[in-house]
Image 1 (cartoon, rainbow over the protein chains, first blue to last red):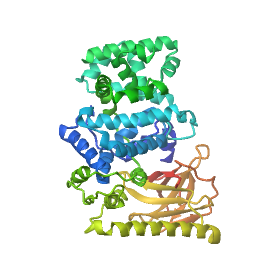
Image 2 (tube, each protein chain N blue to C red):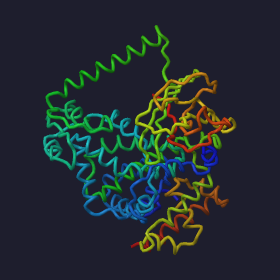
Image 3 (cartoon, rainbow over the protein chains, first blue to last red):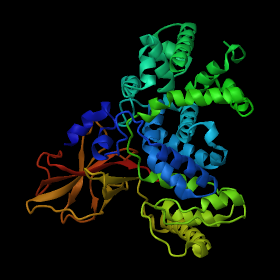
Image 4 (cartoon, chains in turn yellow, cyan):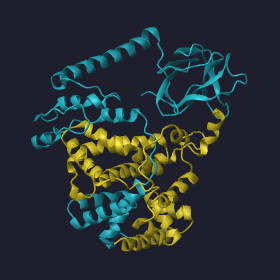
Length: 215
Length: 271
């Protein structure tokens, strides 16, 4: 039985997945109703007024996904949890700055967490990994798999899925590596074994095509 | 391509994707507040890519994470208007935020802590008037803990656990706590009743290193909480795996777990 677990190092979250069933938001993950979104915006307003319960509600509904998003970027479970901790303290202190004119409340919350994760990454913490020794480290190949899976998990009928599908594969991959995995231009160039200038122009053109497709 | 040569849409995408260097990032952050075009482009880009985040498979969030956050939240500077909106009863919440016009007042924080402080939400009859008492009591308890820890260390050499693991069952419910002291003793506290057949016994295991494989910490003879001693193992580390299996009387014959896993969990270093 324990032997099973030992072989799970390639899938570091098997335990969590098997043992802690998370509420599913549906395959596309886009099933949040307008009511829910309003709830987050309302809770942000309450946070600004000092209501910690409101922050707790946001935590309860969003943290499982925020940790997962951070994990794809920082690749280490405890770092991802640190990211989400920092993000929630920021959500709390910046709650008064949020207004519905500034886009969706969820987008605002996720942006804060993403920026925390990217900061941590740029600080170089991802580099001090000790691969192989820790169960919860996401390996390179796993991370790439997750990055590509992010596209496959999108709602098939959704616009973003279609517009990404319309891109040349290497451009799609570069964009996903940047957004989902938090890779820099240089890292993308290295991973794809192409010159830096080429990586930059692929990404720039890919983003332009994507934006036009989405418009 | 420098920022100056890019369109606001390109800047917005690069900002949202995290492709700007640190300097550019700060420049853009500063500009967003005063440039409506740029901030609109950032919102559009954010919403465009958000489905990639919302469709991620959620992961289990450890119990302690909220407590860590709640501990570090600064008090909000409350304006009357914000305080009024905060006082709107919210959902199933049992605690009502206290209204105060005093900046950085501790009372609202303490009142809403009722739910935040632990996983058990306890209904409170009159939290506002007792908030200050609670803070006092918490401070006093904290002081006692510090004193006790200090005394323990200097006088009794009472060890602190090096790691603590909460063991979960298949449904993700906490069922036991392991405190590993790293000095051949580990304390196992059961949090629920386990039914163990007459010819079986609960055995506690850990995985110090992959090379060593699973090692037994000992048996829980009566299916009761116990302190197990005598297994010489390397010092426990963060994220070390602990689990309890059901083995035949006398323990696993092979020295490795053979029976079904009852509960398991990963250790954390207390901090």
